[in-house]
Structure formats: C-alpha cells, structure tokens
Image 1 (cartoon, one colour):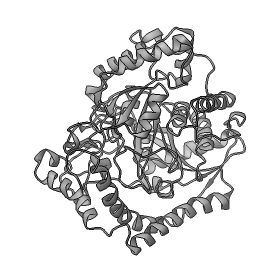
Image 2 (spheres, one colour; image 1 turned 180 degrees about the vertical axis):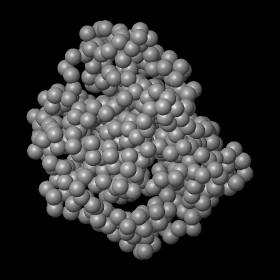
Image 3 (cartoon, rainbow, N blue to C red; image 1 turned 30 degrees about the vertical axis):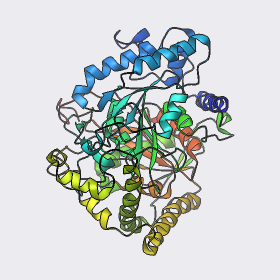
Image 4 (cartoon, rainbow, N blue to C red; image 1 turned 135 degrees about the horizontal axis):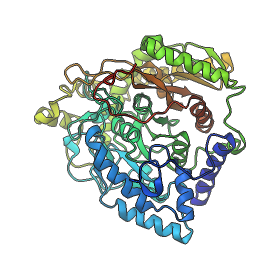
Length: 519
C-alpha cells in the first residue's frame, strides 16, 4: 500500500471516531502545570489533538519529545519501564518539524514519540529480549514494523523492559523481570506486578512516558499488561502486522500491537503497523455507538468477586447505552489449555533457532541454555529455564503428532469464538482482561492464570483491552474479542465502550494497595 493510501486510511480512521462522537474535534487539552509544551496534559492528550497543534504551529515534535524525555527522567525511576532512550530521538523530532513546516507531514504518527518493547529489532539500539545473551551488538536491520514507523515519521523514543524472553523461559516466571532491565513495577501500586510480557510497554504508557508503545503477544502479553496497567492494548489479527525482526515464540500465534491511553491512538498506530491493512470500507460512516450492539459477557468468576463486580457494573453501563448484553461461556477451553503449551514448545525451538542464527551470541537454543547455566545474573529472579529445556526435547514441527495438535488448536479456538458469536448473534465477546495485580515476588513467581486471552490468541483473532474499573486501586480491563480480521470493527466498538465506561484514571504510584486507606 502506498504512503498516500495509508495516510488516507488513517484520516478515515480518525473520521470514524469523530463521527462516533468519541473524539473531541478540538485540539485543546487540560493544563498539566506548565511542565509540558503549550499546557498539554500528557496523560490525556490524543494523537489527533497533537497533530492539530503541530499543524497550526503551536506545538513541535521537538518540544513534545523533550517533554517525554524529561518525564522519563523524572518518573521512570519509580516504575523501571524504559531500558534506554534513543540518542537520536531529538534529531528525528527535528526532521518531523521540518516536514510539518513544509506541509509535508506523513500522517498522524509524524512526530509522535513511540516506545518499542525490547524484543523488536532496532539497528541502532540493542535488542535483547531482556537477556544478557543478546546484550552485545544491535541487530543488523530494523524489524519490519520499525521500518513502517520510521516511514510514517514516528519518533522512536527508546526501548522498554519486558518479561525475559517474553515470559517463555521459566516454569515459575515473574512478569516484568529481565536480567537486562530488572523488575518493572505497576504504576498504580508499586509493589504489584505489571503482568507480562509487554510489562514495560504497558507501564510506560500508564505513566505517560510516551504517546504510544509497541508490545507483542503470543497469549495475553499485550492485553493482560494493558488491563493491569489501566491502558488500551490491541492484539491484532495474526498476520496483520509483520513479525519479521521480532524475537519469536511461535509464528502460529505471535503478533505485535499497540498500547496507548486512547483507543483512537491505538487504531492510528495499527494502521501504520499494518501498512493500511486494517481498512474497512464502512468504518468512516459507521459511528461507534452501542445502541443495538449485542455483546456476549464471559464473566470468568474465578478471577474473584472484585473483578466480577467490575463486570456487573460494566454490563449495566453498556446496557444503559443501548447495547444488549448476554452472558456466554466459551466452549473447548479445557482442551485448548491441554494442547497449547506442548505446541508452543515445538514452535519455539524452530523459531528461536532461526532468529538466533541472525544475531551475535548463542546461535541456537542449546547454546542459549548453556549461556544461562554459566551466567549467574540470569538466575537472580527467573531461577530456572525449564521451558527452554522442554522445548529442546519437544517433537519437531514436522512431526505428525505436532501437526495434528496445531490443527486441532486452530479448529477449536476458532470454533469457540465463531460458534458463540453465531449462536447469540454477537458483535463481540467481552471478558475480564485480568485479575487485580498480584504482589511481585521472585520466590513465588506469578500466581494467576488468566484464561480470557487464549481463544483469540490461539485462533489468531483480534482482541482489545480497554479500562473497565478498579479493585482496591488496581485496574481491571475489559477484553473484547471478534472474528478474524475484524480489527477495525473491534476498535470502533472499543472506542464506544471506552467512551461509555470512562474508567481511565491516572496512576498515583502508591507504595502498596490501600496505603492511603481507600477501598
């Protein structure tokens, strides 16, 4: 797709949100106390508002980029979400300013600061997946999605911490920890976990350290951190965003996607990441209203009474806006849970060997296992590497038993969503994206299984988390799922849900939950 048609698509996406009444046409924003350019409130400003200011000359990308760099310096020591900033960020911003002055802006992301999860290749900065094994020379080339961002004029602000190897190393991992970056903290309550593996990307957006961040997901690694950090996270349909140059777990499930504080910002970023492939001909004239929409609510009461109460309030709010909410239970979940992990082991061995062959350091999984055995710093929180060892012994992806397993996974996961949506005539399925964040504890590791992300992740279907409420100061997201390549429709619906719930609140960086006596 040409730059012109991609720009036209992004303009159409904005038009769709404007028609929906969920994006203010004004470029105004609340005053944040004078520490940001033009009185812009970094917590609340949207990309279209920023671009309106850049167009009228009241804001430059250089000023915006400096504001985010200052905020990283001031706030990130509390959160530990950003591994490094790009030393060329201000040069990138100056080039964007020159384009804006000439009237040649490349679209809504031109001049917008973006953070990248540190498993996304960048030719001019290290890409480590959180591991000391990759902490040497940067990759030779940018990931395909980074090339798209650069072509769109985005300012690559830096790299974010993550759960090491995207949480696919230890049988008892601690989300948000890596040997390279240490532990990322949840900005809402600092002793609580940010979920993983896109921990740094989500926490950085919650703390307003960039306008947008890129995360990656195999199963839950965008939508759980988004929910737990009170931001928007979109896992695109499989194949919509190129995985070339992204450290893999499984080509059958991996995808990169945006995290943002607003659905419109996520939608605009996805349009760039996908090269415009999110186009839907009806989007600009299809207002994102809830009246007449049918939404299936998959409650998942196992996540606790607090989360269930948030789901009840959410259902009531959507019903009051004219949506029809029906309770559903997705089938085949036990079988999916039995099959997914063994399939991922085989796929990881295949895909990580191919990736490591492109980098300096260990050249395959066996060498990576040996590296971890001989480097004690790799064992300070992720004590084991049981998943690596199991993957090394797993059947090859040419094995007929593996192929049958992946075929059954694809069939059952797609049927779980397709059959539920058809039986109830649904526009989307909703579920809690996360439990309240658990206390971070390396000795115990993560202590919650979150089943809501699995159907869409295994099927390769899109999912979107939007803020829904809080339990004892801890955010809970609403996960929305839809059919294959229905990303544009899902984002449009998600904008209406976001507008109706109005659940986003800035973090307060509390030391512990309820430390101020609230709730």
